[in-house]
Image (cartoon, rainbow, N blue to C red; front, side):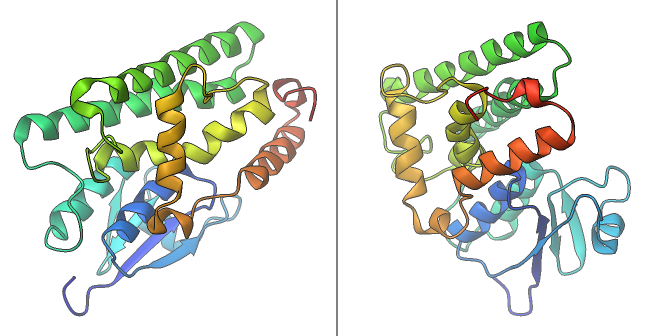
Length: 236
């Protein structure tokens, strides 16, 4: 990191997308200022940094904003290539595959998972739940492939796919309490379950991984405020 570089991250403690950015910075050992945003009262810095969508996260590097978590991860890896471990592989094919799986995680895992809580009907919610489970099982299969029988998706070391998926670790564990079913369990997804534990033990993750119970409490309270009690598991 060049002398005088200033890094700021705008996010929320519960955002899997903001967590990705912070994990990447931590893994590279980069110093940054984290600014917690109140989405009900967005800061002027956020409105100025992302005036079109006003969404998080935003990385501000020497006063210049970079938006969208996947774009930010690649920016961090490229700009600070000489600092800490690389996230994306050097081989063009492997790099392309990592990007493909990152898009898969966003479109096939995160999107339907979010839809479970935003669905207007029980049918939509069930369909979203099915799609989420299918994505998790696909990622389990990716880990089980011969070339990926390593501690992480990136191989022996954490890589781009690991960081992208790690943003969802706490939320995946919280799904049982919120929805009444396991996304991760020793019977169906043993490799993925072990991967979540392995990743959470990393020093870069320990500092910032959200508490599962706190996430559940937040989601339950949010559902009550939005009058979505029927979308929360009845045992809560």
